[in-house]
Length: 385
Image (cartoon, rainbow, N blue to C red):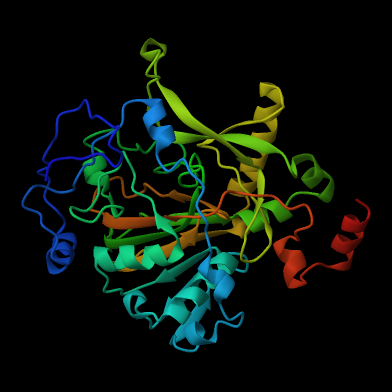
């Protein structure tokens, strides 16, 4: 299958390539069972955009987004009573559901899963028998599927991207043991989009026997770590969020690589829960609008530290083969551990649904306020500000 752009204006300047790396056995078995055609090479690579304006024009339009969690039974009875066990991994973030197959969920259960993800930030399902096609179908329940112009995809299934570190290491330098920040640094997916990512579903069919954990941190709880006085400094402020990949300015290519940039609020409100969440990440939040660079760098550095250094608002998940994680990019940051250093194969497929344009509401509560968790001292502090 020859590479094709996701937008007709994109012209790839790189020659097509056919990857010849050996697929991990479990990954090959899953793909072949799903009827994926591997005869033309794996993965499929879309024609990559070179110029900045082409990428700005991708999905540069408003679309209505109705989050399935808004339709859900608040008690989530259809989902939770059908599970063999529901395990909350930490107080603030992370839940594991045992005994359910994602491919078999009813519409009502999918709505309730949307609500659970909005409340718990990331939800895990082990021992999943799910094809890339079924993974995409489930992703479409949560919103429009993002078809990435840069990332390798499963052949014949646009929007199902491939996460295969051995392949990525042939293109860019693999993370080294002494390189700080894990495998990818703490980040949130697709912050440069006009309407950024909502729910992402990563299914790993192949994982190392030891290591390779993924970590998530709660944006709800990170915001709650800030004092009421400091919250007032950042509430309503916006920042510039940039793309992970650079491009050239068509009119001035000699100026070198540039990034897609969009302006979004530092603190956003989740449309399902109505709770405020801190929405920054060290990798792709570039600067706070209206502040000098030194001021912006200082505040962003502190906010990222709050997210990254408070282990009580994080969950670290140990993968097992055939496990799915579904998380909400609107209320989390995540990072992958590189402690296995490529010593064993890892392979997965990922689907990301795009959500609403980020918004801020000064009247929205924090998660602790919304759940009635505030102690007297916290209530007094809020009242004093």
